[in-house]
Image (cartoon, rainbow, N blue to C red):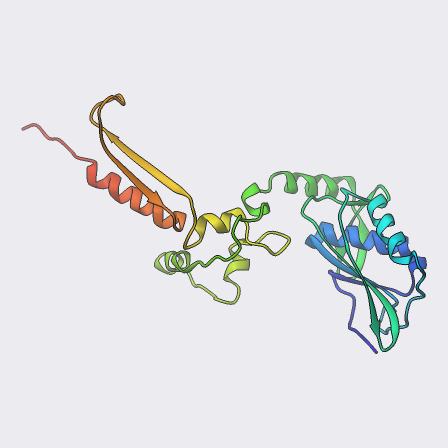
Length: 238
């Protein structure tokens, strides 16, 4: 049986005799995509040949990944039967780039693992350091909708593609979960914006207190700006 081809997210190895190369591929895919799958028991062309299994095979793979990929990750390791042949599937996810394998850094390109030059490594580290935490941290709620955000896009004259909207707008992190930015822009959230009006230049005489929020941040800000416009009186002496 053939299970496909190697890609930037999938690597095949015939046996665990290539464990070092396989771990290198995992780190390489993490640096490129934040995600990767490695199979043992599959030839480079995708043909399933099977992998010899022992009592400690899966544990040894897990320990090697823990010891030689840094920062440390927790892989998902499965034993599968394909055409009655043993296959080991390893799946990894991570957002703490850059990842090293055996002290070296690699980046996936097509189905190859290319060692990073010092300049390329610095660029990767700078890019990761500058990443907005709002795009990395998962939202406290994962059942979100974005109808108001889509309306804001259309109102601004932008085209909304329903099938790719969430990906194109960066509403999910590397693990495929809605991030904090998605939570801020969702139709419903628990983010509150309080606007207080005072009579003078200090806070001794409070006139009015309004509270906005609980919805898409863009919508909330529009409401705040509308309120500010309504109380922004212009006095003219003739």
